[in-house]
Image 1: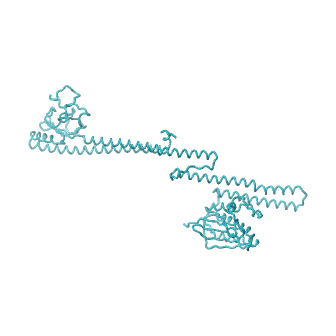
Image 2: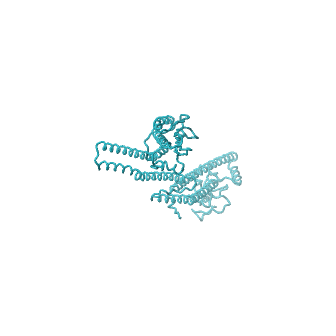
Image 3: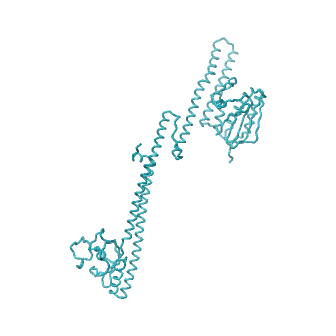
Length: 489
């Protein structure tokens, strides 16, 4: 798959890389030019100090021996290796002695420091090319100052002084060293910028192309998901980068959406199938009551049965709505500190008469007071559903029917378990299905209920970030509500 430069530049990463490269390049250029200018000024300052020292030495020689001694000192210093520029000229600018063959016009006209670097030629570097008067004779007076092309001459700065006899003395220093320094810095800058540009292009080509491939794969998976295939998932390469983290989060969201959709589908199917029977029963009862001749007592009995059936349907719908809200995380129930031991005592006290009437022994085992973060009413409702089921299904026990409610800690969890000694659910698959909505196993068909008790308890535990486990009680069944242990602040 080919990627053009415009396509790469449409990505945020490429744009940021280009922006950072541009900002770095501008800062690097400004920094290099600043350092170059600063270094050049420092070198120029040092050059001026050196020239001042030279002028002071020549002034002392002139004071001691006049012009003859000054000329000898200038000639001596001119012949030294790496010497400065020395020049003594007459009042007309004709060069008399020194190591300078010719200068730019106008250099000797003003006293003091030269305002701009000027071009010059030393002795022995060849005949100087003239622009102002190409046929002029350099030996004639007035022809010592000629225009010099910058490409062929040297640049220098100098201090021009008038001697007491109106002769002119020039002491200067070549600027080749600062210029060479500037050239080195500029070449280094161009090389660095070139390497940066090459590195940026290589990064765009390899990293940008890989990023575009991953984005294309994510887009393709997203199109399939938007087309209705909620089983699709975004690709995860295992690199652990931001693309993988985004894909993992979106996959978790898709899994959650799929679970909610499946729950909605199950609710719709269950309402269509399981609630059809009581509604049909209500209609048949009303039709039978109206079809015959009945007295007031018969009509009253029929209406009372209809109201009882309607109340049971309302309870079923309320349970369905509660389960859906809890599983979706949209419950308006508030949470606070809940004492599980107190909840156990309240539920056991409530169901003791029911257990006694059914001939079931209801026992409790609470080792300590445990607190969790949750909703007291919801936890009580879940525990009531589980205890009610345990009492109903422990009556088929071959021994004395017993239901035991225990509260303890295991690891980092607080476990609230309800265990009976009935026949239980020996099959693992049946235990997994028992917490689904409207699921009633074969042996529970004879017991009243809608098959929503354990489903509601499971939804309540999900709301509390816990879990509901159905374990074999050997004999019987043990339903365990596991809460994460509350961290006291």
